[in-house]
Image (cartoon, rainbow, N blue to C red):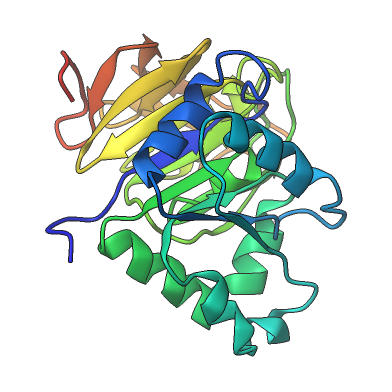
Length: 266
């Protein structure tokens, strides 16, 4: 049994599947010769996901890939589900709707299998919706590409594999800084992490390293001196003062405990 949990690889979506495959290569290397469970639970129409990832991972030498898809929550009780995780060294949550992941597997044998594998050193990776669901509270909906309106944000409980952060994905591509600021304004205790496409954070312990072609934006609201989040009407534009922002690119590191960028190795 591993002395500590395995890494979390949290991806902003649209990771490279045909070129250098830097992010998928990181997943494959961490899984090694073990099985990778491809959880397509987030999608209502998962056709094609498994074939695409099978080809990409086969090119990286990972051939033991099995799909986990659930039409209904009741299927998590099927005996064959445990067989899917037999010998698994990792699980990869694909994109879609993060509410489908949390509502389908939350507090079920599947979630327990994922947590047990992670505790024993297994990798948990997620892209797009599969990234958002990693935190205790996840962003579900909110308007892109404009200043945040106080009432225009919907959040829900996630899987809670990592604490005290909230994650948004497709970040720069969809102009989501406003809604992530709104999430941090509601609870400045949490760090807001906005992850670009083809970009990932590799989290081990309290530190993560950035890989991929884009950036990760870290919004720290601990030092905020003013916010109108509680007083203003829902259609009012958000006001926040003294917000701290870090922008991290490939190779950069960040310490979640100290809330500070860190130099490699991390």
